[in-house]
Structure formats: structure tokens, C-alpha cells
Image (cartoon, rainbow, N blue to C red; front, top):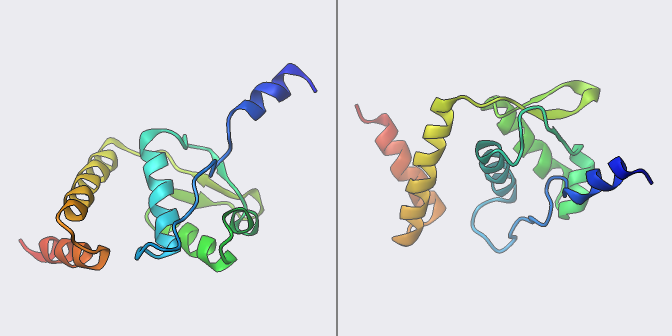
Length: 133
């Protein structure tokens, strides 16, 4: 093994030690989606980072492949990742406006949790606020 091989293995690839919480009321695909968004926003998943293949990540996380596929599909629709066929799914570059929205969302989520709101209740509140002008 060369020194470059050793340094490459010192950084844990995604998802590292993270695992979804099956006891959570948040669906598994949503937990994965939110984790990837958080990592993309904080730079842990830099633009251009290739995510594991659907089946590979599903096996590592002990979830159904459909769970990972749905998370990837929703992330792609939101512009967080892009899927390039056989070349895999990679993290897209994020702009400053998106990071600001992500920070506001994290603050709202923390506040909702602290006040005992369920995920569904928090989503309802957000949807109502979004529809108001």
C-alpha cells in the first residue's frame, strides 16, 4: 500500500458512522435526504463528491434500495445532487441563498422540536406560512 492509499483511507467515506433512526417518526428516506443536505451545506460533502450507489448505500444503512433511491430522487429534484447515469450521483455546488435558507430551516426545526411539535405538525406550520403573503 502506498502512502497516498493510506491517506485516502483515513477519511471516512459517506455515510461514515451515520445511520438512520428506525424509531423516529421521520421516514428513513427523509432522514437520509436531510443528512445529505446538512452535509452539503456544511461542506462535509463538497461539490463533486460522488455518493455511493443506491444498492451499496442501502446495504450499508440496512434499508431498502427504494429508500435510498427516493432520497436521491428528491435530492436531485431539489438541485442538491445530480445523477449521471453509470457515472453515479454527485453533490452539486450550492449557492449562498440556499445556505441561508438551510440555516433558517434548521433554526425552525430546532425550535419546533424544542416546543414538542411533531415532524408532521412542523411541516403543516411551514406550509401554512409558505402560502401566506
